[in-house]
Length: 218
Image (cartoon, rainbow, N blue to C red; front, side, top):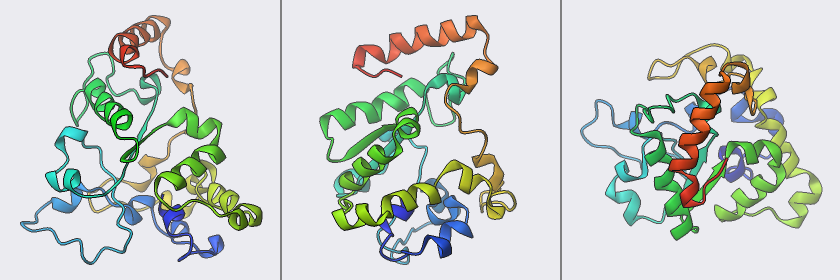
């Protein structure tokens, strides 16, 4: 998203901020900005302002609801996230409720919430990047498509490229998290190397019970 909305400001991907900064330094966690602060002032943040968050939809501030900001929700097959899916437990509330909150909102207000599955992003990156650009109101022009801008962004932001950068192998965020923890394997279906057949069956059963009735499938 950072490279997409800032592609005019940083047209040269060989000298891009993502090459020397961890992605979360450029797109900070919203909840971390509130730590040890009585009042929060976003006026010094570069426009367009981008924030990441793990908060469920119901926990976002009223100002989010009242503003014209857009929400991009990225989720993944629960078997590959290993977020204690069997109990539905996560630091930011029940996993199933978390996903369903954004899923339902994306159906009711698709202009406001863009619901994206990790598997779709990996399978068809060009299509999903194009959809994301249209949702954010900065679609690629025909000239950009023909000149390879879309492919340059995909290459810059690829898991292979970002995970091999020195900045993402060393250093920590202000919250104390090491940069390298954000880059593991990035593979779809890798859970099969760790979960037993019984675990897979149970997670699939719970996923069907919790999500399929709402039209959400992985």
